[in-house]
Image (tube, rainbow, N blue to C red; front, side, top):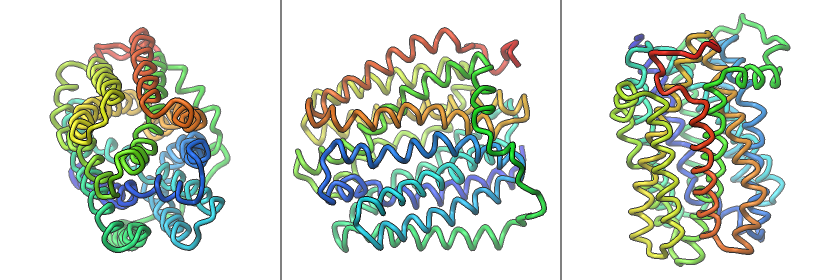
Length: 393
C-alpha cells in the first residue's frame, strides 16, 4: 500500500464530491422552474448518463495511458465552466450544455479518482482501505446537500453554484501546487476507441454480472435524484433544506463503507454486492407506500445502507480484476459507461411514468428491476473472488 498516494487521491475525491453535491438539493426543482413538465425534466437529465456512457471508458483508458492527475485536472476545469453556465443563464439549452459538462467532469474526476485510490492498494486489504476512502469521501456527499439546501433557502437559489465554483478553483490550485503534472506523454487514437473497451469488459464472465447489476441499480437514479426531491417540494410542500436532509439520511450509512469493505474481504465481494442490492431494492419498494416525511427519512437510511454495501463491494470486486490485467482505469470506466445506459434509458421514460402514474409506481418498477437483475447476475458472479479468479482472466 502506498500511503501518500492513498491520502492524496482520497483528499481529491472528498473535495470534489463535496463540491458537486452542494447543488444536488436544488438542481431538479431549479430545472423544472424553467417551465418544463416531468417528462421534459427527465429528458434534460438524461444527457448526464448518456455522456458518461461514452466518456467514462475513454477517460479511464486515457488515465491509464497519460496519468490520472492530468485527466483529473481536465475534469476540474470542465466542472468550473459548468458552474458558470448554471449561473449565467436560465435557458433550457444552456442547462443542457451544463449537464453535459457535469457528466464529462464526473467521468474525469470521480471515476478516475476511484482508480487512483485503488492504484495505491494491495488485493489483500483492498476492501478495508477502499472502504475507508469511500467512507471519508461520502462525508462530503452527506454534508454538502444540507449546506446547499440551507444557503439556497437563506441566500438565493443559485448560491450553491457559486460556492461550488470557488471551491473547485481552490482544489485546482492545490493540485497544481502539490503534484507534478507531466505533459510529455501523448494522447493516442486508441485512447478514444470506446467499443473495444466495452467488448473487452464483456469478455470477462464476472464483469458481465457486474454490468447487469450496474444497469438496474443506475436505472433508479432518476427516481432518487430527480423525482424524490420534486416530490418533497411539490407534494409535501417542503423547502430545499428538507431535500438536503433527505439526501443526508440517504448517504449517512456510506460513512461505514470501511466496515462493509472489511466484510467483503471476509465473506466475498460478489455475495456482499448482491446483498447490498437486495436491501436497496426492498426499501425502495417500501418507499412507494409512504407519504410521511419522517418515514421517508427512515426508509432512505436503510436504502442508503444497501447502496453503501453494494458500492464498496462492487468497486473492490472490479478492482481485483482490473489490477490483475493491468487495466484498472479501463475496467472502472467501462463499468460506468455500461451502468449509465440504465440511467439514460430510465431518464427517458421515468418522467412520463411519473406524469401518468405517479412517483410511487416508479419506485415499485425500479425495485422489481433490481430484484430481477440480482437473479440474472447471480448466474455470472463468482462468489469466491478474490481468492479464486475466473479462467477468463
